Picture 1 (spheres, rainbow, N blue to C red):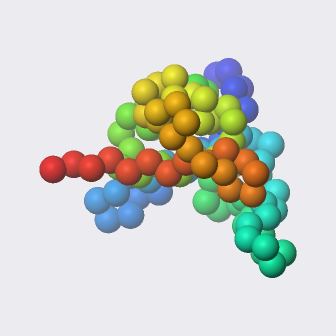
Picture 2: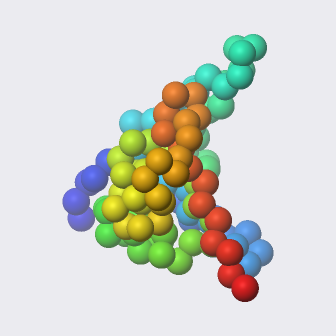
Amino acid sequence: MSDDGFVMRVHRVRAEFVVAACDAELLGRDLPVGDHGQTVKVTSQFYGERRVSREELLWALQRATIANLLGKRVLKLAEEGGYLAPGGSGTLGGVPHAEIFALVG
């Protein structure tokens, strides 16, 4: 399997298929949030530690009801796959971040 620098974990919460993925080098970093010295830690408990290929991440995004994505490469792949509109993301601690929710009716 190729190493594209992504890590991913799938969380199953009731009927939800939650995909959490980030650029691998972000694991363990503390990202600053707010103006009072607060941080958010990028943990393997949430984002996983298993490296996945582009194909595996796209496969998971196709099935996701919720996705939490962090990092330039992960967001670029989500855009290329049609899961995220260009400019459809924000930042978390200066790092590109997006949350995607599938609305099924």
